[in-house]
Image 1: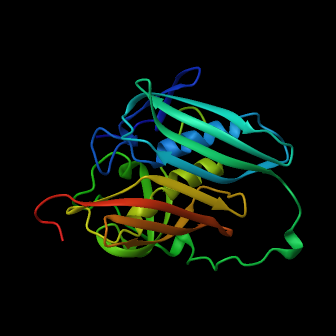
Image 2: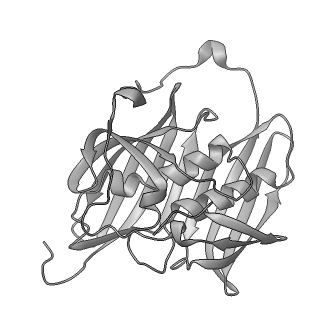
Amino acid sequence: MPLDDAFYTPLGADRFHAGFSTTGPWFADAQHGGPPAALLVRALERCDDRPGTQLARVTVEVLGPIPAGEVEVRATVERPGRAIALLAAELTAGGRAVLRARAWRIAEGDTAAVATGAVPSPPPVDTAEERTGRPEGWLPGFLDAMEFRWVSGRLEEPGPGVAWVRQRIPLVAGEEPTAWQRLALVADNANGIGAALDIRHWLFVNTELTLHLHRVPAGEWIAVSANAVVGPGGLGTSTAVLFDTDGHVGRAAQQLIVRPRGPAAG
């Protein structure tokens, strides 16, 4: 099936149509978490926009399956402030809230002279391996709208992985996505890039995505160095270090619910 022109088509006001390219890889009729997370970031960036401020932390809570089709996004200021503000956003489908997000927006400052602690970057994107096609068990839609270049690991091989990723189509038709939107869309792939289990036999679905940034990202390519841990009681975590082509920008974390898919599990 051909790619959509964009993940979302504006329908007027705060409404959008989520196309086929938002779906997968778990369920054919549900969106991947990346596009709607980026759509919430778009709303947060536009909420009472203040020059000289930046988003610093975004947490997206997944309240249930996110259907393709018509969705609506709203954002508000929960805690106003010139130096620090708390924003909130919600995505609804069919009148039901399916995603909620909160973000801290912080005034810019000059700490260039004391900047420290950044993690060394992975090898550059032009040296990474491009692999086309979807592995067995990964449904079409979202993955076909993304470009992956692998430093280590791969989707079909459980274990830690490092990949440079960028989107092939715009987030919203007629718009150039911001670097923050690109990062949110890519970061939700950490669960797959660093998957500890085989998707053909196990569900390991994230219930949230938290992004902590120490620098505003730039450019199209985002590198994700991801690793997952599965505990003994049906829970797991996925954590990732995030980079743009200039270096380390932040970290991502996801809480996972882990369940067998069928009798072949394990």
